[in-house]
Length: 263
Image (cartoon, rainbow, N blue to C red; front, top):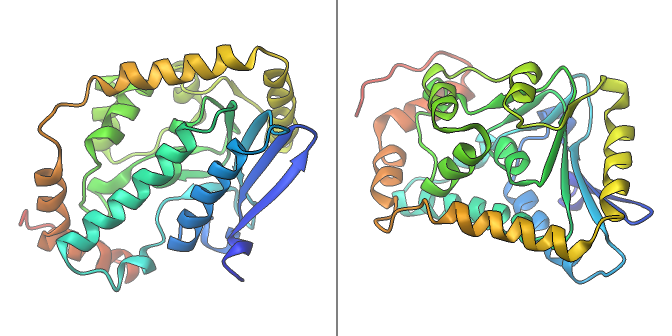
């Protein structure tokens, strides 16, 4: 599979489809995918014929939106600066998505974890199939933390208490809970998800584009006022440079339970 094969693009009328295409790996994110996504999101802003965008994951034996970062990409990353650079690259993907001028819709099924959950949270509209499992089981897997801006994105979507409970329980949230939190617009049958995504996207193309653009940008500006000036490098560095993080990655790749030491 080539780098470009990992992201598939389709065009249905005025709706641009971006499809994560690594179903054998539950569409887990690679470095090449991050580069390609940034380019696609920026290209969409240069094409006036694109009126809406749908983001989803290709279905393999199991449905999956995106199962987070491909841990094999972390094997050759060792220093704290390397990990902080990876974190920054992930932020560039999310910011490029948030700056897409047209409405964006995440059509979620199966695993929607880590970076996949952040991409879905960054979209303007979300719909889900009953199989969706959304969250960040990092307290059970890698032992890292999120950047402050990502925590703020989740709080804006779910609220403080639900975000903290999601991280502290290390459990994934199902479709009913997402719907109850208004984090998704609809829950639809698995075999209707993509058809419904196209229909909603087409509805969005009929609305005043400047109103939608101004509203999404206003929401981002309001949200970003929650981010303190002190930054989060100390938090990220403490987690990424820890023995626990190394243990978490090794345990995940070796398919065993990690042994946490708190150092």
